[in-house]
Image (cartoon, rainbow, N blue to C red; front, top):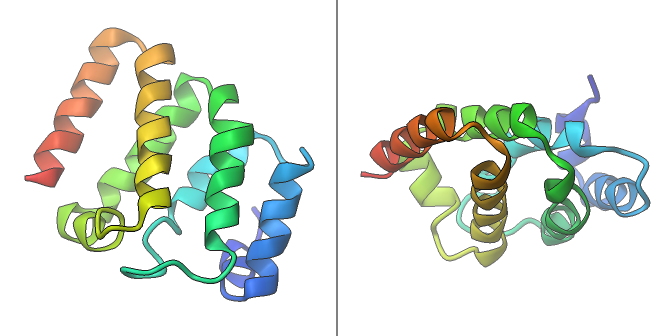
Length: 127
């Protein structure tokens, strides 16, 4: 895999990730790996972070099949409710937009019975 922690740890690294996404150098398969960083900035965005998430929303989410959507949700569910609320739902709009895009894509491409279970698990995490 790619050394995401090295990339994410520096502004230049986040800009590089965003450029690679925007230029089509990386496909949708990187999204589940990057979801691990959804809450890394705490309650505020790191410099360059918004560009990465905008690139994912604009260039990659619509290409994701059910397997990638389910992998993204698995990463989010492992984050846990408290951490998710503190970092993603803390008023940082772009992180909420990423989640909305992935949830919408899951509704489009996942088997209804499977997706219903994932949605229930996600809702339970948020309580």
